[in-house]
Length: 142
Image (tube, rainbow, N blue to C red; front, side, top):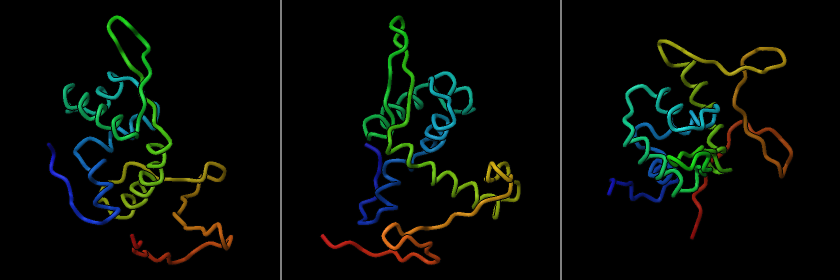
């Protein structure tokens, strides 16, 4: 059994699901359209087949991906993100923006497809219908 964080924290509990080596990169591959095992493996240089199989099964068990059989002999599956898995897109976008600001070598940027200018992350309150400059983290009571 893998070690987990036993902390009452959204970040820690999320890392229990997606924090293993390769896991976020596997999700990202599926997000960008590489939905078959060999496509994912070929794009993640260095991951073993066994580890990729283990991670895909774990992601399916945790409801981040679903599988569809596309070949019976041998059995082969296509992987798609569930709503939960697809919600990680905002996390990947945040990584891209952070990387652009802080990595010595930047590989990607996030732009508005209409004008091709860089975008920023912002927060919106649907209740007030307003943009929020500084959201506050609030602990939830049981």
